[in-house]
Length: 106
Image (cartoon, rainbow, N blue to C red; front, side):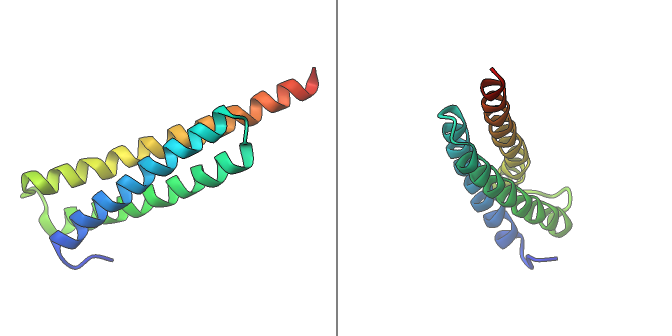
């Protein structure tokens, strides 16, 4: 376990989820401009933050179990949403690469 208190785990859920959301947004913007390398760099960073959020999520569950406060539940949920944000970034980066490959064939 990385986090030793509920407060630390909840704070990490929020911090890392916000990072995943931010880097996912930036990755999608780069992908839309066709900047594949930058898009993948940001998507990778979003995925790393999402994994960190998930670690905090797991620690929070271990520490609090089913007795989450409203604030802890919000943090718990944000960590789960971070996984979807990272996936969106990865899909956008992959789509940008696919677009460039299609254009190169024509």
